[in-house]
Image (cartoon, rainbow, N blue to C red; front, side):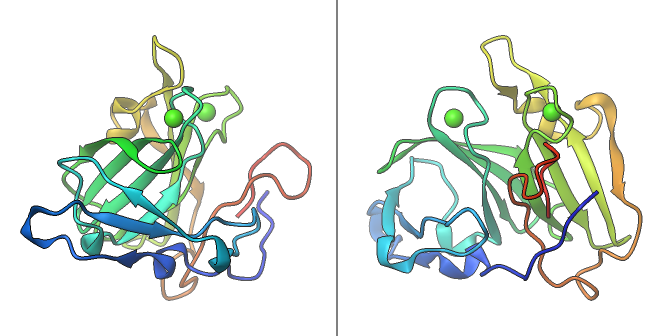
Length: 194
Ligand SMILES: [Ca+2]
Ligand SMILES: [Ca+2]
């Protein structure tokens, strides 16, 4: 089902952190991707994070979720140690809101992709758990306001179907596959690829 491509440039390696001390706003630098996992370093831009957002220097991983909320603005999933956060409402200069979805369990996980995989038009979360070397899929539930209800992606029990489903059974440990990142559908079967 998945098609493999050459390992892309790790997005997290392309985040440069500015001084967040002394109460000054935290800025994060991002480099727009080319859609195939590479980034354009000539077009880097700075993003102003909202109050309450985690310090970018603590980000373990940042992954674009496209527009998960349906408001026309891009959203990002971020892991910070054991925690999972979502940054919503990126408008080209600022992020509207930072929300912590989970405080536990993410230190040994990698977000692989955040997009609709199940085909219902609602954003899902695909992640790798290093403890068992598996890929797990957490189905999103549609919010009443449109887009995904992030609470459904916060815990397995709250997701569509009431639990994470196995997407890759084995062999996906960080030792075997040091870096994986989802891409939009690359082979035209309407299923996102890795
Ligand atoms: Ca959005
Ligand atoms: Ca879905």
